[in-house]
Length: 409
Image 1 (spheres, rainbow, N blue to C red):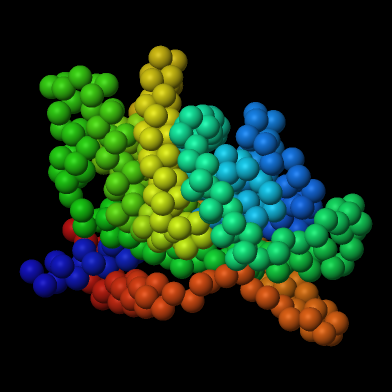
Image 2 (image 1 turned 120 degrees about the vertical axis):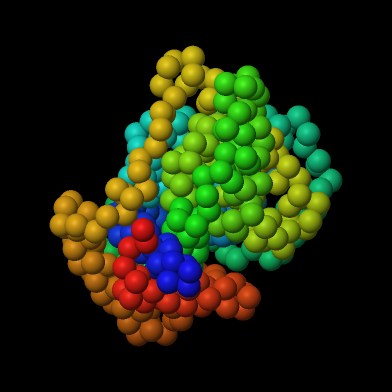
């Protein structure tokens, strides 16, 4: 029996590493594009257009968010800085949703793991999500709470970079040094989330039986209960499942793939993907920025918006006859072989080396000018760091088990 347990343990670790292998090049590509956008798009120039809660400002905030960092914590911190600079609360929330649901790297990951129909749904649904949340906030706007939150943000938020000439920067050596710095800093923010998310997904894929997901999402009642009722239940439950994983935007796509392969309905998958900002650490971060009243208000707006968006997508895709059927096989996604993934990962390693070189050049130039090279905020939460080390130990010991026992039967 112990041999069997070790075999399954090893298989789960191998599955988690397979997720990393399949998506490594996609992360490098996505974050390279993101680093270029962050380095060459003058953010301060956009904030002056985000002070009104009208359609134009929300649209600009959406574009701004899609061109920003996909790290959930960075999205929250940037939204706080925008509010401190005068952005309206509605546009700040639109920015948060866009920066975790409409960024390039997330789209590439969804395309790899879930396919083009889910990517189309993510883009369309992201826009619907922002529209619904904007309307909900407009209808329920707690002005006293928000003004208090704005004052808190103005007192505590760090300064944003001043405006600059993007044409001049893109032609300069310093500008490309900043691309390397942005890339490395982005990875410093997200690698822990990705490690935890992919490891959880690998172990869930192997160790959690399909019957559990069938019971949780009522998929074993298809044909007995109305399809719309099961879709509603899936949309209502999925955000709580996402919150329970404690995984942010980039880490939950493999787990969404596991859910899809276990029969969870389209509405549930989309509700799960959109719920990355509802995990407890992020709610706590919002509470730190704005206070608990506003943090819970944001979480409530998010939940209602996510459920509504998932159901709208499910209804629209059903009406058009384009609901994704089935899911990609996890075992096929996590195979190690000499194919396009191998060669793309080889190129990605070289690109990472280039970014590290540019990052070092940026640091040297900054130190030579007497400045200090500030890193983006890992808030130094010791509990999280302990959890990360635990997951690394779990993954490494699992790989040892796989090497000893071989594939599980």
